[in-house]
Length: 69
View 1 (cartoon, rainbow, N blue to C red):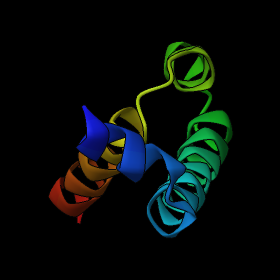
View 2: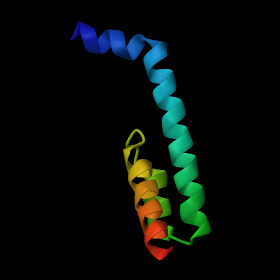
View 3: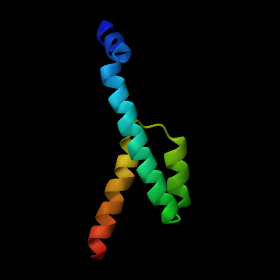
View 4: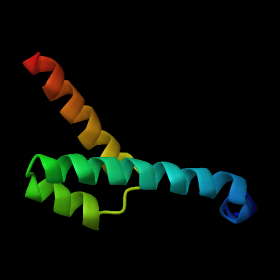
């Protein structure tokens, strides 16, 4: 229990995670809105997944774009 508490109180761990999450979420929201994908936009906006859902969306979009080329 003390390990979890020390991790959550250490700004050197949660600040980078916050920055990565905000960057991925912003990128994913921007791409989904530009493509008119309303359901992805709402899911990315509502679900707090610490960067996992935005990362999945961005990887799917990269795969789809690679298939078209």
